[in-house]
Length: 82
Image (cartoon, rainbow, N blue to C red; front, side):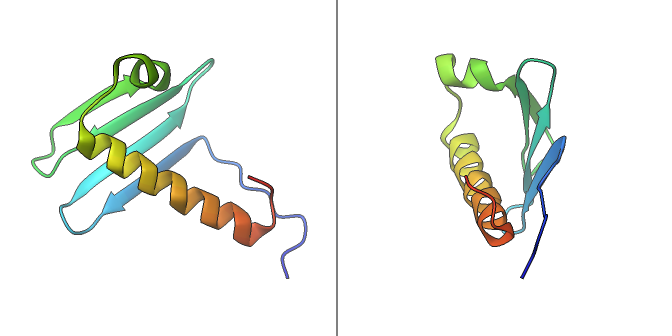
């Protein structure tokens, strides 16, 4: 059993092995920066608020959903409320 465990991170990177893409979420002063790196190593960064208002590609949305699922799983294992 884990006691006193708290997930604290400034950056979270999720690597997708099937297509070698990456999603990096970085905490900033008042928002989060989401960086997507495609299989050809091209990157694009968005402010999270921009994504909510203007949207992005389906690839980025799918990977962000998966990253959220992974983080929720880790937090649940640690016993922290999500």
